[in-house]
Image (cartoon, rainbow, N blue to C red; front, side, top):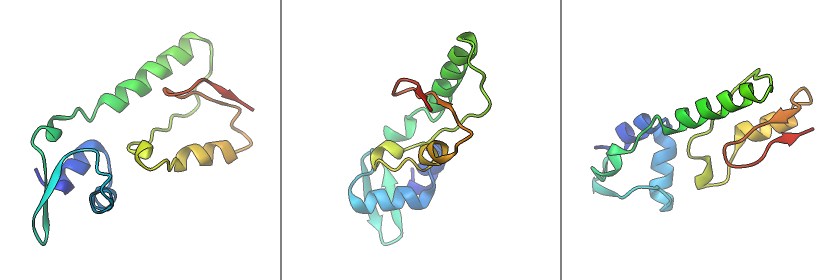
Length: 110
């Protein structure tokens, strides 16, 4: 599978995947076959792109059952690769946001 197709299936912008490939941080095996084509390992193409959506659904369900009002949902795909969490930084900078729930950390309250 080519890198662009793999990136789109994972919910990642193709340019981000291309940048990761060149930086050596692409989370799956890939090889350049010519000047314009990068192929991702067939095994990596089987990764489930809906896994992140399942995490969001489980966390949202938990919040509702715990009595937390859910007024918005943000998800970042691949942000763990480089530590860039643009959406999280935007949420934390918004004074109207008082609670943030994360699947990888405890709740944060303002």
